[in-house]
Image: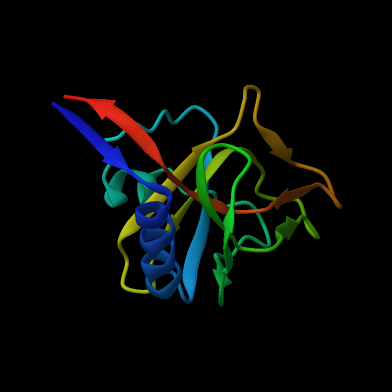
Length: 140
């Protein structure tokens, strides 16, 4: 048996995700945490960054869907940035997660080791969240 997601299906799913992703929340987690497909939101929250000046960020809307370089469609969430202004509490950032305004985790991104240090004034994490929906052929 084969399952095929045609381009039209990927584009439709991206459109649904775009609607569902309005006011998505973007949060950072600490280096050393290794999320997987079964990771729960509570685990992410337990490992959430707490460096000075850290707050979650909201992605008000997504652009797209646009045809992606890989087969499928993508949504773009613009640039999201955190900057250290005071450095009493420091972290190394291991990645980020996105959740809907309703609190459903929709994506987890782990940065390459050694992560991103948020220890000195003006240290920054800048990301460009992307949601990718593949057009693909899968064998069952």
